[in-house]
Image (cartoon, rainbow, N blue to C red; front, side):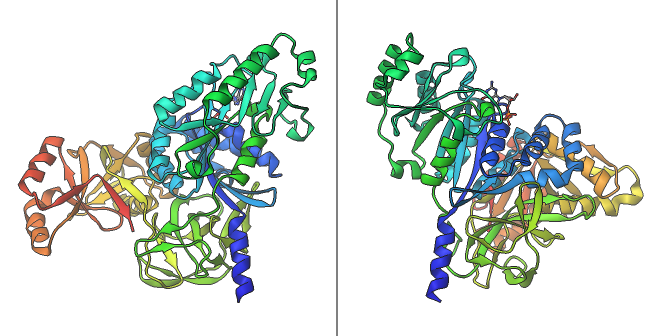
Length: 530
Ligand code: GDP
């Protein structure tokens, strides 16, 4: 059996699982396309663009939904590069789906941060980085759009350091910008990669000029080289050396400059991923840490996407493998439901196709056909009682109640909302009377849910305001306190999609009063699924 284990370890070592984080319009979609070009998945281009519409407007989003076959492939993409298997997980760009983004980021081992060089650090960049920081996710920085008139690179680096508190180590340095963008000088390889515009050009045809003192550089850029040499000396002097340990701890970020749309500098990012980004890491599974090279299969669901193929009306649970090896038809333990389940035909997502997954190891994402039995955060193992931690739900700040336009459709509405709640599209709380409250982080979520209720469950829902303004999950020191609290507060209690008790407060004042009155009860703003 020793050979098998070695094989598993070898396969795990080849995996790189990452997401791209960026403020909208910084160039995430473009970079994704170019990365896929290198992986040979050229047909992806259209799919990635289709996905992009998602954040602009609900109508666009719904259109994309109608082409689900496309959008699913772009939410997880697997490709090969330089003997490595790379899993790229897409994150929704719109901030109304920040919860979804958060969950996706729990499933990666590294992130590529794209910064628009004209704009620097933007609002979403800050938020996304905060999320990465919670797990100390290593970050590779790509400063994009150098072919435009942009800000001074030194300025950009200090902004990243000041605002994001992330030490920057430039690995390449830009020569000029906009119309006079000449290329990037690799500080580690000591050569200049000359910039040539063009969308479909592959970096293999790039012109390299060795050495900063090369007279060829003076021939080509006689006016600029003096300044360029000075600034490179300066930057070498002021920046710390790249330290892989600091990078892996999420404290230091290697920085690359380029232009995504011109496929320039993109290969550097891929090389950094392969060379420096971590292979799948051990994961906290509650009872213990799980090593990726352990033989028993384990993992967790971090996302559920519905109706991806209109012809099949299915839902797919995206599952991150944390250890062992997936083989088709394998039997696993569904720990929340405490029963055995079979995974007959998991999917992987390559280029434009869904492909039946034959083999997956730690770091890979498999798509499991799901008819409601899997929820976000669920752990599957080969029997051991584990629960992967780190998939939180946030207390929503926006609430609505819903009723069917046609009163005879109450049952469908109930079913639809329960299922969408389990899927994580929105949070659904049900009180003792069977009344459903919807909680969202962003308004778009309500619209999407209404659309999906109409198309998937054939029920038109009407939203109404509620007196709920915030929610808190509850935990109690003992059963007696719980019972007393439940008796007294019955009218303000509900259960979430997984049956956890929640306090629905009418106002912060109401919440504080109740908290004061019940000091032994704990009120939580997030719930960690395990
Ligand atoms: P996303 O919102 O982060 O996915 O950004 P996109 O990849 O869609 O890019 C936003 C816009 O910036 C698009 O119009 C792109 O064509 C453009 N863009 C992306 N990369 C570059 C670049 O390197 N240079 C220039 N000039 N434009 C770019």
